[in-house]
Image 1 (tube, rainbow, N blue to C red):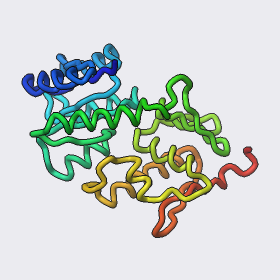
Image 2 (tube, rainbow, N blue to C red):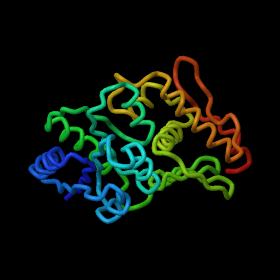
Image 3 (cartoon, one colour):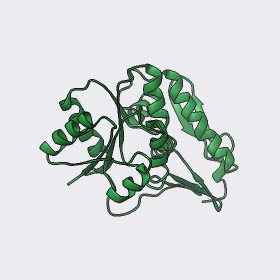
Image 4 (cartoon, rainbow, N blue to C red):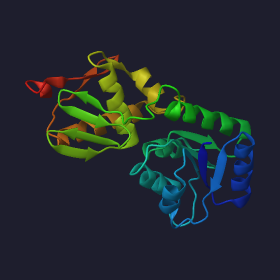
Length: 234
């Protein structure tokens, strides 16, 4: 039975979500200490997190970043904030999806099922850690880590997803639309510049490993890994 951690400071909404989730055979757990969210996360080991933005002390963006340091489990923001920037911020800080309040419970359930399928479905690697390797570069998607020449870097989930797709597609071009679909379920309100910003961050991480000009922009199409760093390393 999958466990859903509900991080919501409105007791009425939290219990409504828990009741509806459990109606469909999932286990709902309500966070009860907003000073120790990570401790409860480790205790419950949830398969998915429902996360509000407006929380006591630290907001949902902060807690999403903290969770992303230790887990790549799906995180769905549920918030009364409806601005485009709020939704972009949710994704930029590591969220996988965004639902606005007031919400329809069936929509929440559909989003939960979608994220659970994506993370733990029949095609996901459940029993053996996935490692993607290319010309001496090793990506550990489950750890959000990138290794190269004895160096190790921590990535965000979005950075990991981008690199994973670029490696999967190599030596083919990774199309912009494919990347947008892979990174965000609802592309309608994702600013075109958001992908550019995330690609720039991945380039910077690769530069920290001493890899220059690793991602080539293919005008009008997408992005391609330029693996000149791997000469002589195979």
